[in-house]
Length: 274
Image 1 (cartoon, helix red, strand yellow):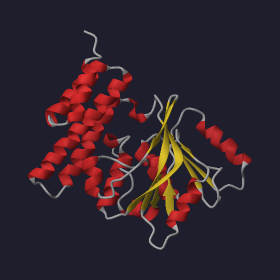
Image 2 (tube, rainbow, N blue to C red):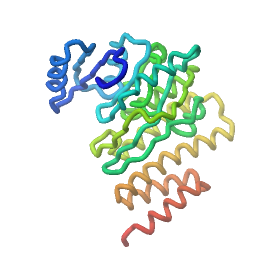
Image 3 (cartoon, one colour):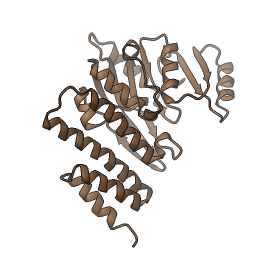
């Protein structure tokens, strides 16, 4: 963050009850940089949503740019985002592309294209928190991040859904301005729990969806199936082909016409040792 150009920003660090020496690291850095507007807030562990809300409530800027502890911004990120936000009609939400680093592998993450509540709900999350800049008052208007621990790890997706449902305008920038790093100990490492929380989140929004036609019931069915298929794919990457098979079977039960699930299930079956 300190490498950003220009330096017209404030840094708010929320330490959500860490036990890894973060408190001492931040305090040491702050003492060495007394001219930097840095606010370090330590609180008892309350979950990701509560930590992000603490940062939002203490911020004084018009926009919030998030940065999770395991991700990185490239040095011109804030400068380029500011140019887009100085337009006559700036968006409420703006998201840029990132590099995805997973171990020694690196590839480009192209975020988007969903700009509507329906698109984001029925086709999946297309924003990344550390790549997203949001108008602060819009976050406050919709009540901030959910602090329901049933959504832990998906509180960002829930917020984007509520912002778009409230009419916020989102844009995507094709500049790569950050690095999204997948860590083995991250919140998404528990695949099965992450899938269950995702289904809980979807059901909460499906309950609020005003239209109940056959078309939308099919979309809901396909979205549930996609959650199971995502978990199956994650287990395949981990090499746990038996659990992958169980989740892919659950995906096919809900969406038997999904060719991707059939291909993944067939490939996975060939990897199971009998």
